[in-house]
Length: 349
Image (tube, rainbow, N blue to C red; front, side, top):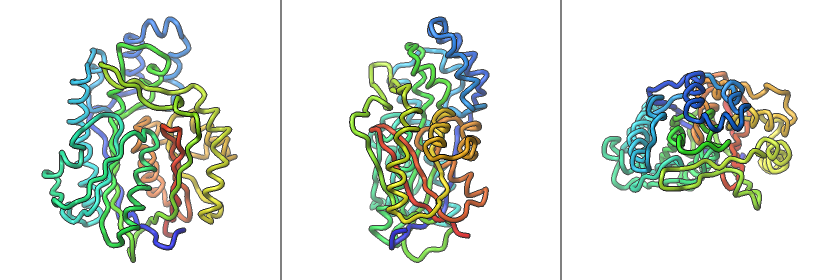
């Protein structure tokens, strides 16, 4: 671990009120993507093979059956992201026993919509943040944003011991559901994505806490911009998701991760991974030479919430801590770039 560890004083998660059962989503998709299913009949199996039973959304299921333009999607994003940010941030601050006015730095991670001013500014008055708070919005990290944003927060906390850093990841990935498109990636997107938020309160120095953050790192593979990301058009965001992703992970994940583990001087760490999907988890387990099914917290979060993009790995961390995570661990998440983000964690015995 590094010489100045950062303590996670609290962690909280939040989801919106609309629960989407996977069976109902599959039925809607069969109507919306009828032509796509006619061309690719096996795509219907994605919904039953995704390892997902339910997800949560800022809009009811019926909303997705109708066309929506950028203006309507953006309005849904702003309303939903503001509410989820407040819910997760307030819960985390309450658990840490810290008032919003005492937060010194806010790192806001979100890539599923555009807000300028960014979300923490939009909710600043309602939250009660002080005028001098440092705002650090992080955009474009996608599914890797939870680990990447936490890494940014940890580095900022380490640079100013004693200051309170609030990290909030909030994504409304269901808003990328496109009824006007029917490519395989769009159908897969409709089977995977959910909405949610997670918030953590960090501080460096002599702190008591159950979890500490040590070394952080990243690895970006060259010539991989087409693996994951968004396209932008007049209707909204369009998912970019390569079918080669699980195989890529299986073949390429281990080497940079092992270098990080060696550099951080970790011995036989546990893993806390972003569960992008069932096949992605299979690829991670194969790459790390883990028995299939080892990443059970990841699979349980995927089952109950789907892939919420950035916050998902923080839901996994919350579940692992509740299950009495002890000793050293490595958090990993993969996102557009194509980039692997990782953090060394140490849970108190």
